Image 1 (cartoon, rainbow, N blue to C red):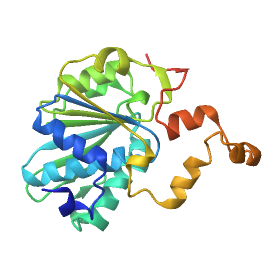
Image 2: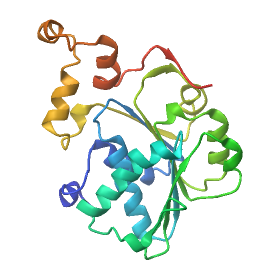
Image 3: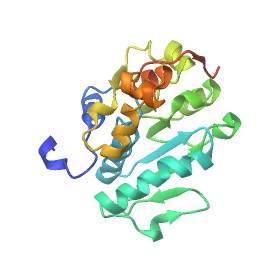
Length: 229
């Protein structure tokens, strides 16, 4: 599949980096970047295509299930409705927070704030959305029960976190850094809101400039706040 063939879906730089990581048989893919860089949409799009190709189980984790519902699940449903034209209410299990594709693939949405509840289920691919909100104990349980690729994405609002010390040092990892400028599908209004954070003379005058927020959410640079241990 070429880039020109999929411009009608959220095919940002992160999407193509995921495809490269797959071809290189990377165990872990780390997507770090600014707000609006297309990380989550690219991951979900990639996961949908994997589930369409063969019957696999995929689980997306966030700190808690409520947050997962409001963010990743909402993005998944939007993609399935607007881009892939595949959403079917009959495939959705509201009590289990899972979607079963006609070919048998299963997409689960879970919280990771109770590591003791992560001991049982296994999966082919795990997605850790906003991984800086997830604790190390939960990650260990998830990784041990994932047979294939583990994908993590995050806005770098912290400078100290287990992700940096225990995962980014691995040899079998594909690391990608991106900013909102790498996302050609970002709406102009959202782009302008991010640009208002830059400490330019005009933004300073208007009171919208924020050095820390610009660094994290505009440039995708790591902040100075203490992370999850």
